[in-house]
Length: 125
Image 1 (tube, helix red, strand yellow):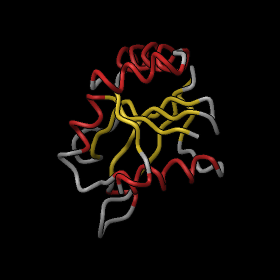
Image 2 (image 1 turned 180 degrees about the vertical axis):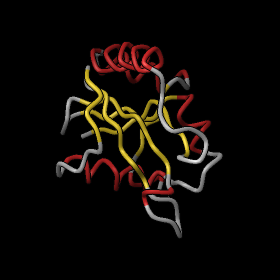
Image 3 (image 1 turned 90 degrees about the horizontal axis):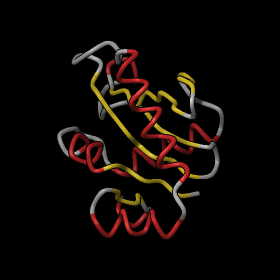
């Protein structure tokens, strides 16, 4: 299992109190069936609690995955910033998800080297 975060998601993540360890925990929960919503086209919504708060007042993340294989954190937002994303935003994220999920490993490595993706590892936590 491999976990990635896009450049856009990583910039957003740095503005929150979340860590890579939180992302790993979220993926482990999703692997165990704890997915908040299947948005279609292999895009899933996952709530993640912020330190000292519950999931209800935490953040929402949108993750692309073929479940149990590769996970791509694409987008995140705080519940107090917005309720949801628009249908148009979802269609764009679904297209992005499909693109990442279809990439061969050597192209993912190239994306990491160029800074478009970052791999989340236990060492980063």
